Length: 87
Image (tube, rainbow, N blue to C red):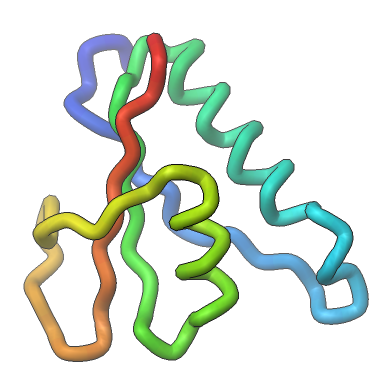
């Protein structure tokens, strides 16, 4: 997988009873570390405007809004984000 332009983080879900414990942040950090270990220096994701907690988490981790990527197309409810990773 070395040499890929980016890695897409597809889904991060923490059951409601487990929320508020920092688990989503830990999961994201582990996924980012996996990308780094694979030599992939860019993480991308797509979420929705109706996911304010997810948007806040991603922003706090350094993700910034970007243009659609891959086969995604811009739509009114989609939010695309990316983060440059240290490799």
